[in-house]
Length: 472
Image 1: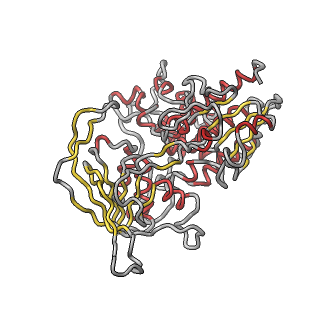
Image 2: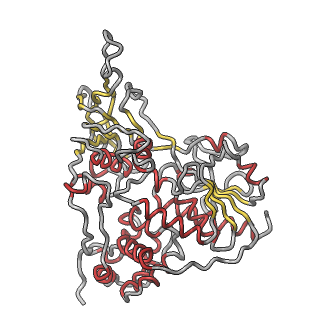
Image 3: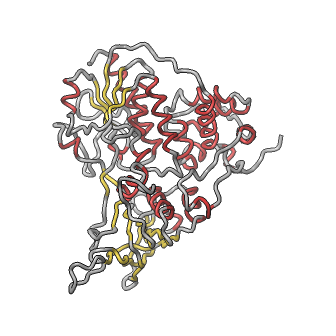
């Protein structure tokens, strides 16, 4: 059978339609298309795609089951390695991980591994009516701090081994960045809820509204009978540029803007939390979070949304698919531009003028690309005298986040680096404290969902070895 050179198309909402709603953009494969796409797999003996997956899913094995139409068996293969397949199939950067290693990709487009994972997970969630097999308890208790990708993965892997796991979540809903950071149109929250419910079936307990470092400390968790602790608290502390005007009304961190929309449903008419429905929005940054913020602002009714990024389109760190979707929806990219000041309205003669203190625009300077930095990306060099202003009534800063300092400040002896990330052994995720492990964005700073899951998986393995050896 001749090889089909390109991936099978996955249907999406039309750009003009989706740009004004919060429904999922990509609509997924049907059974016939999934089987046809699976048949493109060459079933390589050395399986390079597996090495490209941070959680080492047996990709050829699950794809073979899709070929045979055995979708539930394919799901069972995936969940041997991943606790969140419906999530990963939607938000993982497969193009730089498993699909980048696909042998078929040398001459043609790689197999659409992510789309197939999504299809298999969605098929299971829609059709599976049974109950999971709960393992016998081994008598050990483990606490997991944070219910994001790393925490849920660590909890799921330990629960499947018989551990009694309690996940402590600071917010009122489980899911971490999956519920507060990623918009509904990319990752429907019902999907996250379903994945969490599956973990609960394995015996994982979720305790919400508990802020470790305030409500409880790590020391108190050990006193309460937990024999090991995993810190997966993420990186929720936003960064700013320290330029004039950042305190003006209408300036958001992307973290706050997305949390208000995603978690608190500020886009709904009767939401209890407000968010600015601006008309001219500028988003500063070039990652996935910047794309999410820009596309959310558009759906909230903005007439124009611009992304200001200091490097070129080739250096944009966001997923290519997200950039393409943003362009299709009408987002404008002002590349090789760097903000130098946020401008605001001030009426000194009338202190009660309601426009006082609000954003009116942003001043940027043109850049050129210079020599590569330590990551291999060419450094942006500002062009003197090239400043100009962009009109805006809302500016969203999406330039990264850092780990929240609360846990490190209330846990004596926990080593952190200069960026606030918890220092761990890369293989085992062990911290400087006995019985305490950490992973995900709390260690690395903001990164991908799948890398956080890989850390949670490594930590679960190390915790199992630690407690099985009698160190509790």
